[in-house]
Length: 172
Image (cartoon, rainbow, N blue to C red; front, top):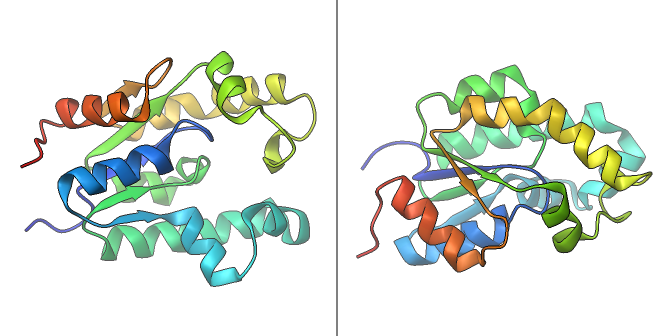
């Protein structure tokens, strides 16, 4: 068996990394892991609380460590937080791995997450902030990705199937 994750999902908040990741893991008979969930479990508080109480730099530090550990230990499907690709070291860690960028446009983001206050980086003027985040991150998602799968107007099952097809992974 190869080392490292079987599939790594990256993309913006609300792109379906958690839902699609769990479906992929089930289809492939492997474990699913989410680095944001790892951080929440280790810290005993939600990501939004870490942002508010400790600031984004502290969260990014925790995120870097969580991604490093997950890439080293996990052999199933791995989902990274939306901003994980901002770190040069994280992008370097992803080199050569089967990374899939789950993309979506702003209208799809509005439908899925409502771009509400539960997302700490989108608390004020969420549509504009989402667009600005994507302008800053899209090229990084594309840089690390082996394939890009558009999620707009697709069900999680359709996205999972597209990921399997794109990576030429067939469930048994």
